[in-house]
Length: 87
Image: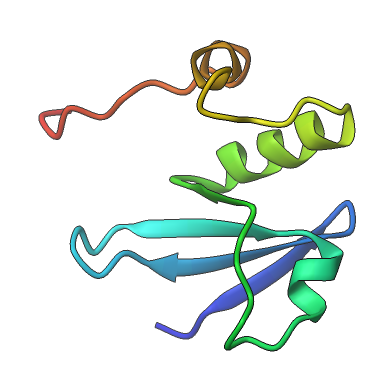
């Protein structure tokens, strides 16, 4: 699969495949992070769907940054739920 990159509200979202699960992942980069060399580049968020990635950008633009402390609140806002693997 060739990596697909889209731009959403100035952010780059790179679709990739998780090496272990073989499921798609969507890595969200700020404009500054994307401008860095790919060797040193780090993503701002890794999402399980394009919807989660764009929701993350929307909240980020509103000044709501997801951290370990507010992750559950973020999850409620975006409708994220844990995947049990049996669904």
